[in-house]
Each structure stands twice: as structure tokens, then as C-alpha cells.
Image (cartoon, rainbow, N blue to C red; front, side, top):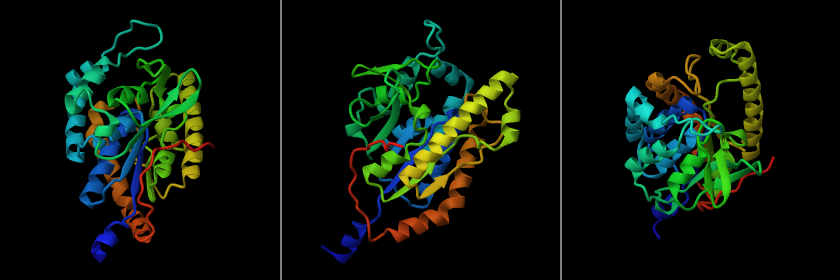
Length: 297
């Protein structure tokens, strides 16, 4: 084996975890755009909720420019209405998952599985009955994507192998521990949730006082869980885009370009640190990608 080939095999494995956050999750596209522009390849990827959707499309081979085109298509009112597919046929959810399945199938094919992906992917979900975190990384992809973005009470839940699975954000909104246990030498976590201390953001959310207080209290709890999870995973680089006060989690589809740009800026800001981390681990790579395992707090 030539010396150059031996060195290339020591390239550190980069794992990227994309967090949930509704419309704010389109910032992940900006992150991926900058990594691509800098020639930085991702060896394994994980995601929750919107982060799971972006991670899945990326793992299927959709590059950042293709993802941006998809996002802009979704932002159009007609496409958004079809995708949301509101059907209050039950009292336990508002939106059907059928339209999302069809939309996803148009892009990557209806029978795609985890085995078909170009890079290893792990999606975070929660078993709603057992209150347990469940990693999806094998089998059919589209049901898994539906599960990771199935916000309880909002989007129809998914049954996989007898388990009722919903959005994983309640227990692990930025699943950096997945890519760490998969074998990544350098772990990048992307948290698109609002900064919990940004009082102007919370004031800008036009909700009744009771709803606003409840929403922020839940956000505080989620932020504490995420912080503990990221600390446990020993994240090397954290990207937390400054998306802006006027972009809500469940709204702001007309501001997708602004959200993507925020992801780009935040990634350029951390680029020196990321390159430093990759350089420091160049000769010490484990370079073996394994199945993901949740880390217990």
C-alpha cells in the first residue's frame, strides 16, 4: 500500500447530528452547503424531526443545492398545503402522514431502505407508550422518516414492528450521541432551537400569555435535556444558528431563504474550529462506522 493511500485511510470520520425545530430546521441545508463548499465529507449522519428529514434526504444522495430546491418548492403555498394534508379525522392528530410519504417517495423512491443509503443514517424517535428512545437505522426509510417527524397530537403517529413511534425531540432533539457511538472521530451537532435566554424571541411569539408561558417552560426543559445529551456525547463542534425572532417553529415557510442563510453563516463562523478538530485527529482515526446506540444520561 502506498504511503498516500495509508494516510487517506486515516482521515478522521466526521459525524453530523441535525436537530429538530420545524421550519428552523431548514438551516441544516445552509450547514451542508458550507461543508460541501469546503470539501468536507460526512461519514455518518443522524437527525430528529426536521433534522431527520434533511439527514435522510442527504443520506439518499441529495446534495445541498438539491435540498435547497426542495425547500423552496415546499415554501410555495400550494405545495405546502398539499404536504400538510390537514385531516381532523381523529381526535389524536391533525395532519395525516400520507402526503409526506408521497412527497418523499417522489424524490427518493417509494421502496428505498436504509441499506440503499450512500452514508450511514440513524433517526431518533420515541416509543410513545413506553416513553423510550428508539433509534431507527434499518428497514424501510419512509416510515422511519414519518416516525421521527410525528409531533404528538399534530402529526399522525407511525406503527413500526408493533411500536407506536413519534417525533424523537422530546427525549433527544439533537442526537449527537448516535454519530458518536457510530464511530465518528469528530462530532458536529446542529441545534436550531431558539436560544432560551433570548427574551426578545419569546416576546415576538404572538401567543396568549398562558400558552406563551407553557411553550417557553417546555422549551427550557428541552434545552436542558439537549445540553446534557450533547455534553454526554462530547460534541466537538456545536453549531447554533441565529435564525431570528420572526421565524417560528411551526411557521415562517416564507422565510426559508433567511433560515438557510443563517445556517450558512453559523457554519462559516465555526469553520476554523472544525478544521482544527479534523486536523488534530488525522492520524488517530478509528475509521469504522457501527450501528448507533443512545447514550443514557
